[in-house]
Length: 233
Image (cartoon, rainbow, N blue to C red; front, side, top):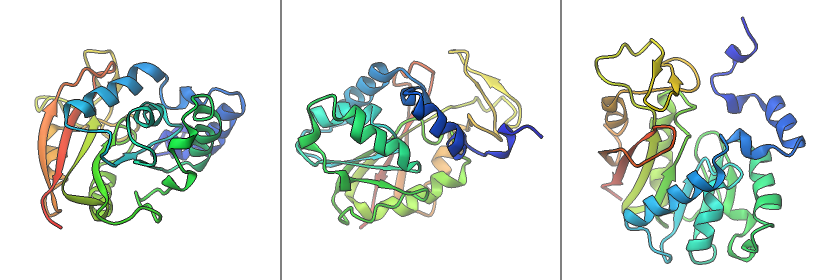
């Protein structure tokens, strides 16, 4: 068994992550495309209705690839982030944020480390919008349902949460590798993961969320998008 195969997600390999950070290549951990994907997230969320006065929760905020762009747009301390790797949060806050002149717009306590999508410093019913880009592409399906269950408490009724994912056609076998039109190879049982559209919709069944498939949003690696709307308090 190879070393890589013992990790269900590349973000579980903390030793590798620490080595990459030590070399100053932390942007590579999140797949590079720093400005391209960072700007894409903000422009997409603007189209979905995000205004500077709204409060945003960034799931998988990592080293603030999208966070920096959101901070530039949002009012001070209206951005919150959750990530499973504290060292990536730290390097985002101490290195990436410091370079931008936007440090006054984000308190460190707004960023929280959790593998189960919890934020102990986030007020309940305070979030208007949420986003998770390239998060569930690295996680098995059950984590999506756990995320929806655990973050619902932070959102206002009617709050919207957007999740990107690699989609495979219904005609394809789930357990077989799939190559999308951007030449990204995904698999159903290891990172990077793919899903059927119906999987992403089904994740909301039994929760307080309603799923709406969006699909294409011009992600450079061919990830699709789905919207979840909080229907109850």
